[in-house]
Amino acid sequence: MPTRTFTPEQLKARGVIPRHVAIIMDGNGRWAKARGVPRLMGHRAGRESVREAVKGCVALGVEVLTLYTFSTENWNRPRREIAALMTILRQTLRAERRELRENNVRLAVIGRAGDLPPEVVRAIAETQEYLAGCDGLLLNLALSYSGRAELVDAVRALIAEGVDGNPLDEARVSAHLYTAGLPDPDLLIRTSGEMRISNFMLWQLAYTELWITDTLWPDFRRRHLYQAVAEFQGRERRFGRVD
Image 1 (cartoon, rainbow, N blue to C red):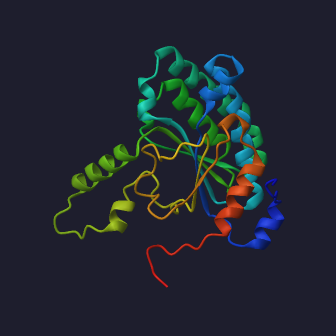
Image 2: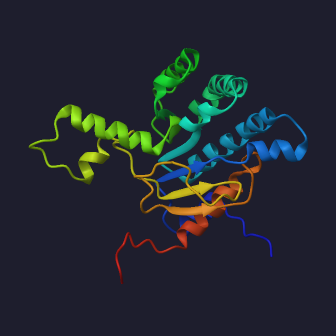
Image 3: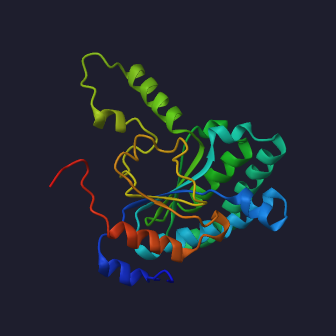
């Protein structure tokens, strides 16, 4: 039986739109292997999927889209692959900034950005400046990101400001996370069918709805996003409460 397709207007009429969507973009390597092409071709093909996800979120009125772009574990990949990934990232930021501005998209980065090559840091800063007048969707790129590292950095910041004498509660910890001031993700999408969260937003995903698809990231399109949102709308979110 074919999967029902939805339009943004239909989804808005059906129910609540998630404020924050997070995506683990997985499957680039498998996509390339299945086609007998170099692995980096899969990463390049994934650019169109990012574009589709951004446009889809803009059409839905999503406030934040966080993309798991490069993890701290990814630094263990071969040096040539890392260099190529950084080049793709830099080129993509420069190539897409005009369209991002046309769609009123802002840009932010979470993670240990200091680990990134200087030329990538410059491309990020230039893109953020170019988009400074936008006030729509916040495109949040998780770069050199690790959920555990985020918690470690939050604890270090708390210790540095002095924990003694000040109440330590969830709100205070949240205020020291990379995502401080942002709503936690309502919906997490993972492509390629893997059933794990891979050290991503460990604190923020406590009550997030998960949607897993076998679709590989380079094949992900707006219709997949809309299907995920439709299924999200059909779930009852209790946040630990009972009826």
